[in-house]
Amino acid sequence: MRKFNISHKFEFTSIISLYAGWIRDGKLPVNSDWNRDLKIKFTVQDPCNIVRKTERQTMADDLRFVIKTIVGEENFVDMVPCGVNNYCCGGGGGALQGGFPEERRAYGKIKFDQVMATGADYVIAPCHNCHSQIEDVGHHYGGNYRVAHIWTFMCLAMGILGENERKYLGPDLADFGL
Image (cartoon, rainbow, N blue to C red; front, top):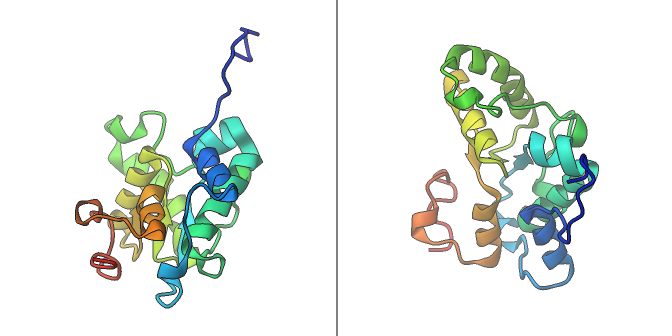
């Protein structure tokens, strides 16, 4: 729309920006109390499409605000580099379905090393391609982290995560709050 100057009456946004706004406005009742004693460490992947290609640093900042609110600022470890300078995971653009898993994993080794350097127990991946790629390279290279979607921890932060929504959680959280 912007590129071709097409008039429109809507605004491009992401669920991450909506979460951040709802939390700031007190409409989304989340907190990090569930992780106060557990002290589980988290990092986050900055997806190419919503961070580096479109909404830029504002999206990266909103993403970190949401995550720090739901897991505790003291339990968040950022990747280096991060935000708009973070590395691509190597799973997007059809790479996951492209039929070259060894090449994809070789490229993904950069992301694997970056995740491992954080020492985080969990990688929060707002993008499904990032989720699948980071999980796959973790298994391939022997990583000791789990990958989960932001919604999983949002539900933990609201005390409403159901049994059937715990697929990506490790033994440290699989039964938490049940």
